[in-house]
Structure formats: C-alpha cells, structure tokens
Image (tube, rainbow, N blue to C red; front, side, top):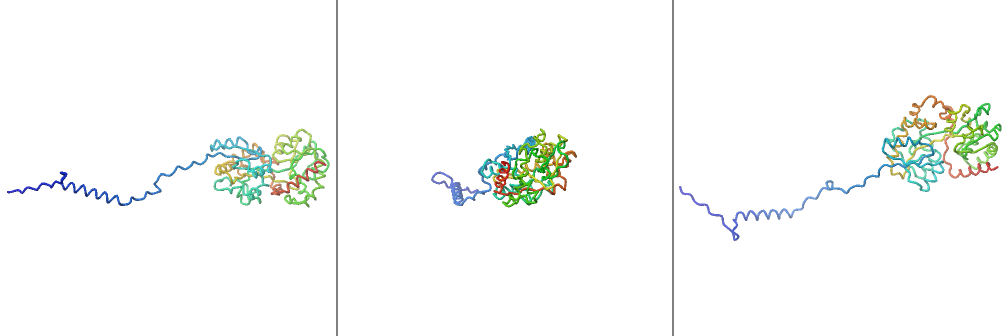
Amino acid sequence: MIFSRMPEPTRGPLGLLVPLRCLFLALLMTMAHSGCRKSPAPDPSKLPSDPQPSPPPAHLNLFGRVGSIPPSIIAQFTEETGIPVEVETFASNEQMLANLLSGGGQHDLIEPGESVIEDLIRENLLLPLNHEEIPNLKNLSPKFRNFPFDPGNVFSVPFMAETVGIVINTERVKGRVESFKDAFNGDHQGRIVVLDDPREIVSWAFATLDLPVDEVSEANLEEARPLLAKWLRQVKAYDFHSPESLLLSGEADVGILRSPAAAVLLESDKRFQWALPLEGAHLIVDNLCILRSSSQVQAAQALINFLLRPDISAAISRLHPRLNPNAAARLLLTPEQLANPASFPTEEEFTRLKIFRGIGNQTLHIEELVNSLKAQ
C-alpha cells in the first residue's frame, strides 16, 4: 500500500504557520467588532449610594408647669427608653405663651393650661397628634375628652387637672361656708386669703352674678365692680404660690385656693374643711402638646404615652394630689385618696365646673380692674 504524504503547512514571511495566523487575525477582528457595541448601562438601584446623615439622637426638651411632673417620673422615663429629657418650667400660662411667641427656647413638648390652647392653635404653633402612637389615650375619662378648646383632642391631651374652692378652719369658723357669698359675707373681715390671680377673682364675681366666665366685656366688668369692691376690702392677703400657709399659721380662717394645696391641708390637719362653691368654680386642665417646630416628635409622643400609663399616672397622683383625668389610673389609688373631696369632686360637683377659654387682650382690663380695687 502506498501512502501519500500530507503537504506541510505554508509558512508566511514571519515564519508563522498560516492557519495559526489566520486564527489570530480572526480573534482580533472579533474583539474589535465587540468593542464597537455599547456596554449595557449600569442599574442605578445597584450603584452604591451616598451615605445618608443619621437622624439626631432623641433628646427631649419639655416646657412644663412648675411642680407638675415629678423629677423621679422623668428619670424613670429616661431609664426605660434611653431618652434624656431636659425640663424648663414656667409659673403661668401667660409666661409660657410670651416665651413661645417671642421664639424663646427650643422646646418639643409643652404643658399649657386650657385657656391658651386656642391661642396656640390659632398661631399655628401646635402639631396634630398621631393618636396611633399614643395608645394610652384610651385611659382618659370621657369627661376629659373633646373639650371645646380642642374637639377630638387633635392637638392636646389632658394630663392633670384641679379646681378652685374654699377651705375653712372649722375651729374658727362655725357653720358651713359653701359659696363665694358665704366666704365674703362680712363675718371673716381681714381673715381671708385668696389666690393672687385677677382672672380667677373676677370669675368668682361673674359666677355669683350668673355671668358667663368668658364674656369679659366692659359692661360685665362694670356690673361686677361693686361686688368685687365689697369683697376685696375683706381680704387679708393675696398669694398665688402658697396661700395655705396663712391658714396653717392661723393668720387666716378662710382661704380660696387651688385644690392640690387644699387636698394636702385636708390630709394633714382635720381642722380644715373644703367646699366647691355652689356658684361653680374653675376647672383647670393642664395639657400635653407637641410644638410644630419640634425635631423630636416620636420622643415627645413616647413621653405622652408614658405619662398616660396607669401605673405612672397613679404614681404622680400619689405625689401630687390633683384631679386625675386618667380613669385607669384611679383604679390603682386607695379609697382614702379617692375620698379626698378636694382632689376628686363628686358627679354633681363636676357639673358646676367651668373651663376658661382664651379672652385675648381682655386680660389687661381684668388686671386693671382688680389692681385698682386692691389699691383702695
């Protein structure tokens, strides 16, 4: 058998084997052709994003009423949540409102009285509350929901309340003193101490004359002037902060004061007796509200919810015997605490209570009237 020999591969000028050179050229052409095609655009969702700034750490600024929320309660909130709370206090609604309107302080949560809530809403200073973040709202008594100053509790949560009434020293005063007319009937001349609060004082005269406490017109003030002049001549002292001290010292026999101070007197000394005036009296409601300018809304709502917790609210009542709007918290108080008539009015007495609405510049006219009568 004869085998034919395969021809050798042709070599090129560089001595390369032709088939290999052809293969190499083909590869180069393929790569060049591929390079002409556009690469697919990157997916933006898979690109690394710029680092986002971290939210500021929770640090709550509370602007509250003097002596309202005990420091131990604030400390417990911080211990449970890790949120520090800086507390600044005010002595009156007028002081608080002036501070806010002047832009003073960096507050998150405030504790205004009922008479200035409408002013705060009108000035667009309050943030609507997210009720879903405050589940303990359910603990509020129905009596403390939907007040006229904030229907639906859109901006405010009643936190604590108190009333104004009459305390007498039963060793010095014989018979019941059940009304403002009884207190100022002339039998206690120079032995009466009252709150140094012009609007309160004028409201007592309005209640006696059956005038609406919020209709502070010039005509109504003039109608009340003779009665106020007669009453104020009998007053020994005006004291906003501690009128009960004159009763304890025996320098006064009759006092018109706020219910928490009266409750302490009744608990500590059996000489004293309390009466909610038959003409009616002021229901003072302290509320919790979040400022629209707050940077700590979630922390503020957490503190509101904490303060409405039954055990926390009851603990506050034990330290400060005020009228507690928290129905669930009342179940944790003792029968003796609930029986204090200054702290917890009866159902019938509650119907005689009146809240104060905002009256704007009329406050100045009230102060002028009362101050002029004091000076006589």
